[in-house]
Image (tube, rainbow, N blue to C red; front, side):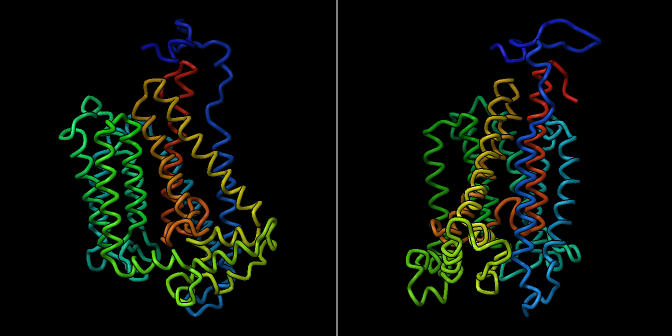
Length: 403
């Protein structure tokens, strides 16, 4: 197969490097549209976290200063950018080598939350490892390593993508172990996102339809069963189906109804930045899971649409970068890029769907926008992987070696 590199570069050596046609000589070393989109989401998130959390200072639950959450959010952004820099500097072939060890580390982290003195419980869920004032949500790390692990698996088992024993069972064992540990925390939202990452990558990697369909049915059955066997999850689903029932309004659908009220108040252009009423102790978790409702109230349909377009562009570029890597015969890199796109797209879709009442209420952050240190840091690292894939693509098209 002739790759784009062979099609568009001259086979002339100059100073030990390949020279390229003039059409590729002007290719920049990085996609600035992706950088601009990430920056826009981070700035929007920082502003809205400050706006949504400004009233929490006089809450008995928090008792903090007005800018407490915004300052912490800004610190997490800085930490995430530093971590992302180091992720970006590491070539994809090294990530390929580290994929399975990182997968094992992810499993150990999921187990470690149940170790007394190490795991940290918040709101009845044990999902964090405590390091003094900082808590690490391990499911975020597992999302990151799952992209690497499944991409590595697909590349190694490319010849067995039509086999149940060599193609499906190892994937099922991995996702089964992760899902079991997440269900003990419990964290159904992370289970859904990680399952989507795994399903998306193996599908893009060429897993046969006759394997994918039963695989999907099994995962769907597990998710439905976990809802049906959990009374509080079942109650949440029924409340979602009829949120305006007076009992539901004051119970399981309380967040949803106030989120919908916030969107309704925002109308087309919003009530103005900082002028939200719902964030004044009416809408719980306004600065985290339901920050989009505050955006809808203060910036209106226009602000909501801008958020949708930013995520659309980020996910679209992820898949385009991944397809470009595959055309350049960088299969692992392509699957990693598309895996990141699946991750960001599915998590954003669920968060948006929950906020507007399309999906039952589930605790998932809006990537890059919601308050949450682990989410911000790990998501920035994942996007650094995406930018690294794009960077290596551009080097190859310009006829240069990876460095």
